[in-house]
Length: 360
Ligand SMILES: *Cc1c(COP(=O)(O)O)cnc(C)c1O
Image (cartoon, rainbow, N blue to C red; front, side, top):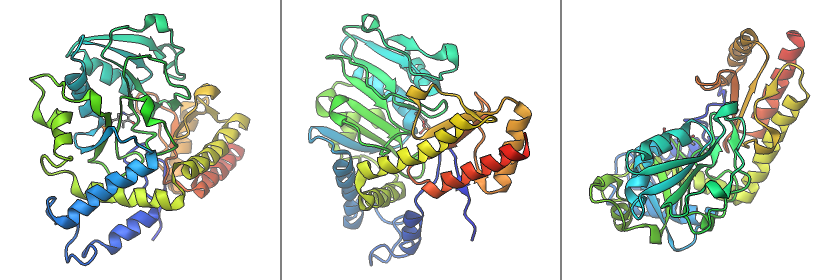
C-alpha cells in the first residue's frame, strides 16, 4: 500500500494512527457488536462518544465553562447565515474584515439580514496580507465584529486579533482549528468546518459564549438556531455520528502528542522548512507578506504558468498531490495541516530542490 502526501486544502489528510484505529474498530466498536456508523445516536455507547469528544475538545482548547460546544452540520458556509440570524438582533449591524473569499461570502450572506460594513479589505493585492485596522472605522453599536482567522485560499493569518472593545468578536477558524492554542475567551464565537484539521467532512463545530444565545430572530430555521442546538446537546436531530467519532479519535491523537502546544511546535517547524526554502529559491516564491504568513496554507508560484503546470504534474506523479492553487488564484498551494508529517514537508522541499535544478 502506497499512501501519497496529500497537500489538499480540505478535505485533507487525517493522522494515519486515527485511520488505523477506525479501521480496527469498524465492525465492532468496543464490544458493542456494531460499527459506529450503525448505532443509534441516542444509545448509551454513542453518548460516550459525543460527550467524550466534547470533553476532549474543551480540555485541548481550554474552553471556558461559559461557552457551549455545538456539533452541527451544513459546513462553515451554513454559519454565514446562522450567525446573523442568531446574533444580528440588537442593532441589526455587523462589521467585517474582507481578507479573502470566505470572509467575503460571510459578509455577503449577512447582508441579507442587516447592515454590514466592510471595515477593511486586502482585495487590492489579491488578499496577500491582513489589512491594518483603523478603529475609527468600526461601528460602535455593531452586534458583532467578524473575521476569518486563517485564510485558506491565500495563506494569511491574523497574528494579532482586532481590538473590538465591547463588540463581540466572531471568527471562522476552519483552517486553523486546533493548529495552535488560541484564547477562546477573547471571542464571542469561533467555529469551523471540521474537514480541514479535525475530522472528515460533515461536521461543523461552533463554540459560543452563553450570553450570546437566546436572541435569534423569529424566522430563524430551527436547525440554525444555536440556542435550540445547545438545549439539545447537539442532538436535536441526528448528528453526523461517524464524523464526530473520527473527531474524537483525532482529539485523542492530539492529546497523546502533548496537546496544542506540541502540535504548534510541530506546525511551526513544518512551515519554517517550506518558507525557508521559498525565501531562498530562485524559482519558487511565496505570495504572502512574511508577517502574515499562515502555518497551515502555503501558496507559492514560479514566474511562469507553464512551469507551474509542469511542477504540479511532476509532483503529482512523485506522490505529492493536490498542490494546485485554488482556482481563483492559480499557482500552487501546500496545505500542511496537523496530520501532515514533518517528513512530508521535508520530502516536498527535496522534490522542489531537484525540480529547480532540473529546470533552470
Ligand atoms: C473551507 C472553508 C470554508 C467553507 O467550509 P464548508 O464547510 O465547505 O462550508 C469556510 N471558511 C474557511 C476559512 C474555510 O477554509
